[in-house]
Length: 366
Length: 118
Image 1: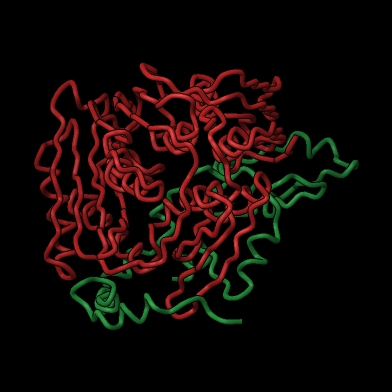
Image 2: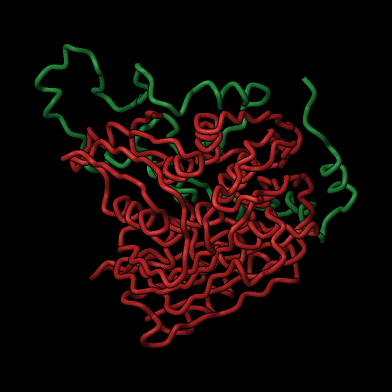
């Protein structure tokens, strides 16, 4: 039994525990907090994990500050639905869900309801246009359809009301990963979405983003996606995501969204500002370098650590806090220690490891 | 810029020991710095027991690597970054070589450069 403290890195602890088959115990979850114990969205995630696994045991003490988790077998399956609640965006749930589903017995097909676009988690457009292509590349998936996300309704905080459908295939084991060439950014694509606000907001955000990025690149195209009536969820909101594609086919993404409206208070930000923010964020990510942006570092590190017992190597930008925690956790669960070699001139980091060789237990080759 | 460098772990050659110097696993000693009145000692006074963090500081930001209760997110908050610096003259121009409109040879040199030797 592995023991942890606190609520940090909650999702990856559950993912690593399930993939390694090791039970865990987390003590002291927000014990000094005014409102101690696990949050609703964390309980919601545990329910989602119960849906896609078989035989897992979750024990939570009375105050919710201690969690014991004994993982079961990942089953996957189709026709599932899950309500993600209104506290966190779907990106929060997708990160652990996709990692688990890859090692499931059957391909996963699930409908998620809740907040599709917010600023605390990667939004569904990032998932569709950056994260899934990245996973396809890392896993050398050829069938693009098997790993897909469709947005039927959008939902902004605080009301939510969005609906997406996600399909994840199963993998037998992961191929070795070697991604060291960053390339140069050759084009930028994006999606500006708006719901329950004037459709012009989308176009104004596009203007803001293009105003910044066109100085660097002519090939900038941002799609507008205005959700009408019943597809627009329960709260007004708008924002955009940008994805820069490099000459080596890698993707660097950024997102920005308008903060939820407060009643009686006029927002200081106009749509053009949101567009500019996303564009500056993209520049920031490009400047840091590496084969992916900061929000995907943790995922790349995890997939390297789960990879075959061969050399897996990647080049990343300066490590984000989430990535550092991931490195520490894969060491605790799988005993995988990365060799971390910085390069001062470009401020990038070369990471390499011998993977743990995690195999899909329900896909044994006879 | 100072803010951003505090966010990202790029401590030169000792990066590896910085990362693996702290274990993810819970051990006897507490590492939650800045939590104020924390101690696991037997002499925990009653006052301590009833002290709660004010709700403002309760959710520790995700970038605080020492916080046990840091928010679990992969996204770096925009509020932690200094995005205004891109409006300065020449800030974007310095990034030119990372785009196809820049110097391809400089990009090739960057791509060819391996990790620093010790």
